[in-house]
Length: 121
Image 1 (tube, rainbow, N blue to C red):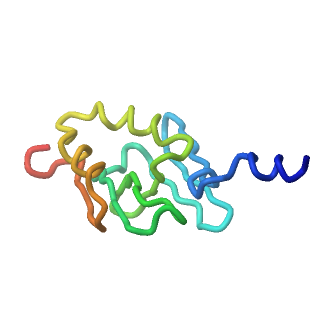
Image 2: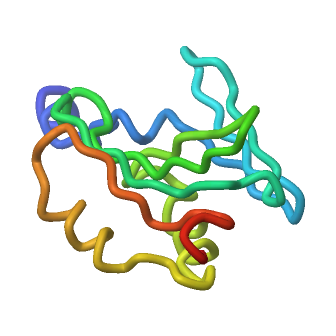
């Protein structure tokens, strides 16, 4: 019986170890083996999707919220990713075309989704 329990037991994905805390003031990402990252909503200057080729042993798509002195990376598939994406995708001039391009890409590449005060955005 233990053989079948082990065989059919749910396996954790690398994204399962990330915890995203979302408040009205900030986004914080915690992981047991990484430094905690945090950014205030008002400090976000760029939003990117960053694709890597390290999956499936590690997250291979990251939503990056970047500021001048802070930022955080939220792995695609982690709890909190969809909620953050739902919020930032409502920003004026959000680039949905680059989201689609990111999902089609298997290379190491960055896709700018939004920028504050750059090129009229």
